[in-house]
Image (cartoon, rainbow, N blue to C red; front, side):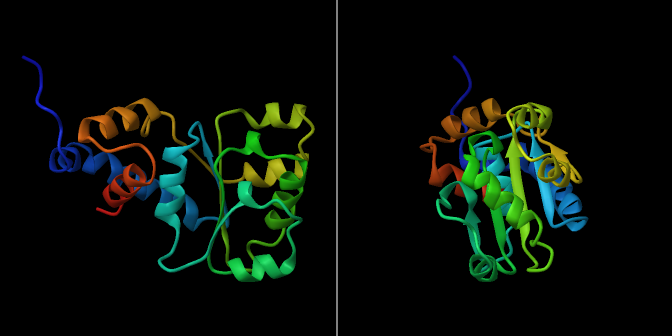
Length: 178
């Protein structure tokens, strides 16, 4: 009794329209700005959304891994690429300053900055975040709640028999590129 395990082909058929719609919404939002805020989704789904928006062969900078003060040279190396923040609430003070520095310059360097948060920006402001940086982040946003829930992503990953992590990200990213 019970349903047979889902395979990659079944996954693709069942979720293709969902992922196509999400990809379309991401591209529409990103076309309007150099800064995109993903609300309600952090971790794997936010990573997949950001990787979907990354141009082929372009630089990728994860701001959480940036432990030194950001400078013009680093932005030039990232030109034409993407700066990613998987969870705004995880940024320390230095990384918040790096984010503010980048926000002022991404347009000039043709960089797309994609940041995710599961918290209202007012919570971050109450914790001492720069109000101007938060206002800039809030200009163009996409709500991921109701698009692809993290629980659904995990269930699909388990059903396909893929270990969470890079392999799962690659499978889901392929679905977004359908």
